[in-house]
Amino acid sequence: MDIYLRTIGFMRIAVLWQSMSGYFNASLRALNDLPGVEVCLAHRSPSPDAPFDPTLFGWLNPQYAWDHHPSVPRLEALLKDFDPDAILVNSWHVSAYRAALKRLRRPITRVLCMDNPWLGTPKQWLGRLTWRQYIRPLFDMAFVPGERQAAFASRLGFRNSHILRGLYCADTNAFTRTSDATSSEKAFLFVGRLSTEKGMSTLIDAYARYRRASPSPWPLRIAGTGPLLRLANGSPGIEYLGFVQPVDMPQVMWAATSLVLPSRFEPWGVAVHEATIAGLIPICSVAVGAAVHLVQDGYNGYIVPVDNPGELASTMNSVSRRSTTEIEGMQRASRQMSLQLSSTRWARYLVDMLARATSPTTSISEAC
Image (tube, rainbow, N blue to C red; front, side):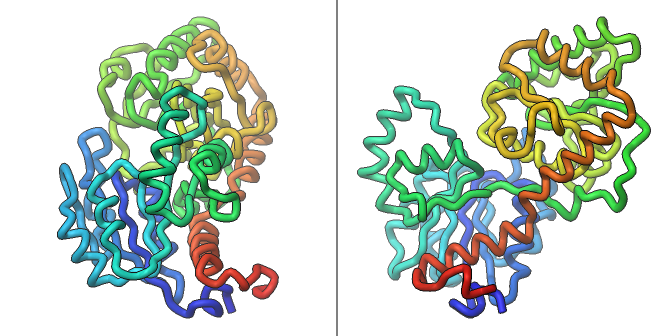
């Protein structure tokens, strides 16, 4: 029997989130599918920059979708009726979520979900002092994507045993190919918000240089929307796909060869996990948090400097000049790297850790 069932038998988990996504929806489905686990959700309605189909999340009940600011009375009513054993809270910036936590009437495991990497900026050093006093008492544990964020959580006062890793996970079932066959069509792919922090100017500049240098350039497909949409239109070789709904994204990934993510700021980047599951060769900037765990430079992909279109163009040229055998080898390596994370493992790990938080004498070895 699974450790969480033997330990608690039943668990209700409330999720107070901000912007929803296809991958987090898949994680919540995996969580809700576990025997003895129930989930409720509060979240921001889809935004123009990420216009997800709201019916994507319609399966989850009870649910509270808010537009501008969540209502504290609505949140209190939701939590009172659901009576959770644990609460996941997306960062600490939503004042209504903090207010709801302060008004809880019984002990509940409160988990801060954060993706901020530790950068050592003056703002972070100052925030570290005030956060420990005013925010830290609201939370018992932290749930982070990887080690860059774990370093920040540690500085905020969480003990290592109270820091969970692996917050963000792609929809592994959706992006897994039914066979190892790769697309005969060669193309680069960018997935994300069309904005300055995603390195859009660097991407467009690098691709223009790559096309001038390559005798047989691959096309660049761009999936997303945002304030720099104009950069995605009108340049030779660029195919603009618009915003792609989660249900259609696997086909877009499978039809490409390499993901290019030249972000200036990217705390994690779930698209990297999606790409490695799909067998793409990721080219990421050093700013992409997921690259630390999912990209081994020269093995399954490449890591390039930030704001360096010349280096990015050279790397794109190197990938497109590789033989079919070399490309297929790197794509197989990407699939291997992706196996570190899965939606089902995410759900079981979370419930296991929550169960151990309420029953610290239970050990993993007891489940073997």
